[in-house]
Length: 503
Image (cartoon, rainbow, N blue to C red; front, top):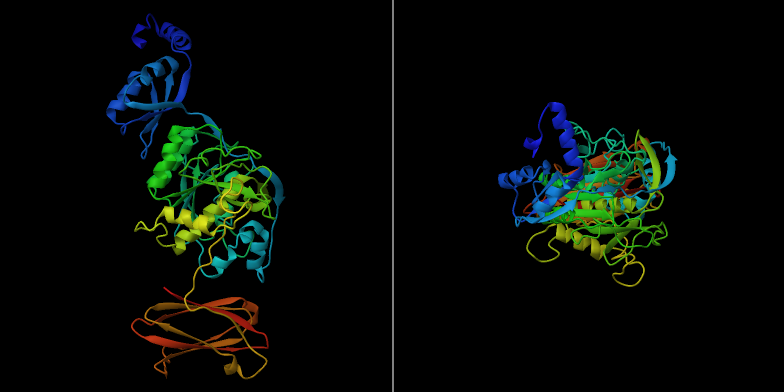
């Protein structure tokens, strides 16, 4: 077409501008889906129609491009094209602000204060698996949002990388959160704020979080930026995707991207939307995505929460305290804050394993999803309903082999052997974890066939100012069995918790 522009450079410019604004119509940002994986022929097709290719996705048959209206009409008739849809502007779910709060705690009761500060994390029972060593270790979570303040002291140790799909500078891959309300940082803190004795704690405090910036500082992005983020998560072998965003329009490209992630073994979690009792928004409404509604501290449905048959789970979503930019903490509310609780619980389940629940011979993301449904606290009408779904998400209670809990020195002070507890381990490698609260000493005597194994027996001394204190002993009982005797010493009422688990 440009060959028809004549005379001088100035004439070319003027003539082409005139043609573009009239004959060609407006230039559109679109996503073009193909029946087959697009290759050189499809690239040539788009360029031949005057289009500019912006992004080819790796795990779905689609390309984002800029193209004029008149050329779109010609492309639509091509039998190789499955769909052409607008690359629309989308937005994060705007949360209800609860204000900023500064937190500072001492060290003596730091752990309990962290759970008090993060009431919503505690509300779903997260401390139980944490106390048993289930913290999401090794699980990779992509937070598709406004980015993350990866310098925050409650997130820096768990931040593992990411990318930026919203910057106009193609060389800018920095996913730092620049949003006005710390949206992505707040979501990330609920998922994986560190259990470090200060601030708040996340549901999975040792999971790896990846900042995938698909929304700008005002919370706006595009369908293609979100699809690119999902595509990145699949390519980089994430385990879970959190999508705290919502919009009312269905997009085939987004549905294909979420389905591709689900097929690749990822758990995809999304906020149901702040539609005040209205329908569930996309992407949460997609069948490949877990839709999460918001509840209050009293387990009532949040007044802003979407409802509908797509609701799968609910989680705390009002006055949620979490991390915000520049090392701070603040309260936000909405389904954006509910979804990361489910993401965190999914990470705990992945790290501990749930088994082959659906009986298909493999343990995968479908088993995680079913476990979440089976263990949810039923709220509202009995069974699955359109308000709470399966109910309130609950953190798992890991099964510990041969547990001995709460050793208490009795009133026979000075005769600690009368307070001894015993256990037997056999045919395996066992981890013995002693969490001391107030004992001064504890002896661990190990016997094999009634003969004391001095090489395996241990004695631990504790200082009061160090409480609570934890020690771990590993014993290899492969091919044999050992009797364990725990002899505590301390003042009346002194206690320690002992957990024994086969590795």
